[in-house]
Image (cartoon, rainbow, N blue to C red):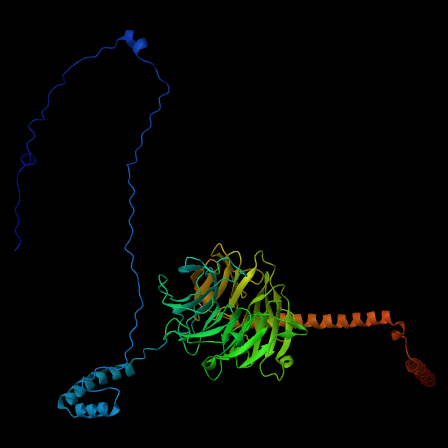
Length: 563
């Protein structure tokens, strides 16, 4: 029930009384008459007069810092549990007897029957509803109109006081949730070498505050690579030439390392896992001019070796491309002389194993990678340019202009056939999209003030990591237009590569013809009699001349007879 009370009084009867305010006429309390005599003696006319008035209220500045939290990764391994204390779960006889005893219990049977109805209901529900149904099959989002962009997600810093160069990056093969970073000092006779740490680290991508695992090699790591078949294994090449491998389940120390007398004699600049029948084979290259094959189960000495000799010159290996897309035995080596060696492991001799030699760069070939969609074509980075090659030609089919800064690393996008990334010594990251632009990068980012030594892309194509000379690793997220394949992109890229291949092939054939012609002319200048005709040639020409005249006379005679 609603209770209502109505007030029926005038407003003046409410509140505090106001009887002190009454109406009355104005009253003069005092009078100040003007005195002209004091105007000139006590007062001075100021014209103009400035008066500053600040109408903004006074403010005070306060600083507030949020509470910081330290994260730690904790794991738990559950082997088997739930058994009574008097049952040893490792003994199969005891567990089997206990299972038979429990299965005969009436309470167990009743519980199983009760749970069976619930399970049957959910099974029928799953069969009735397809949770993996795609409602819009064949429809693809068009991100071509989206402006290319990238944003920094997090930065991983070298925890040591002496900052070292990020020499290598490797994403965890299971979705890229971790990243392994190799730190090293690549300058010869660096003054910081004695005081710098040898440690490298593994970080969880979502926790840049503290490394998840420390890696302790015998010497500074120059390269570090995850095993794509066994995500717990990593292989690394050291500055002193050793090869080591780690099992993250066993801690920070290497499981085994190669013998110093059987290893490389220079820093190991590249190491790759082989896509063979087992997950334990890898290959490495160094500037000592060798490619060595290893089996980590017997890491004492290499299983096979190859000397990188072209002609009489020993080539120092800087980069190694050994992917399954190119073939199980074919691989490429980028050398510090600027050449690229196409090799085949099945060759009978060292000369047979080294095939085509591609020359083009003026400096070391720091990066070398096949296009994941078109394995016949590969990308190389060296000096101030990047080049796109075909296996069948000795000259590049596409060459960039000279950049103002030296190029240090590059890699293809795993999801877009026309996109690749390159890093430079001035700290900029170039993102190239050949589907839209060929002569200049689609996006250039100033990531760091120092050079970017390494760049790597996650398997999904969205997350990119780049490491700088000052020991910082930048984790960046790419927009959809740079990560999602565009409609007709693969076909257009294939047509462009084939067109450039045919054009370069025709130019190469023309260059060979000109070279042969120039060789003949030079030979004729050395031997003037080389171009003089022989007697047989003169007789043949003379006979051909007489035959032509006789044929003409015969035709003329037949024409006169008809007339």
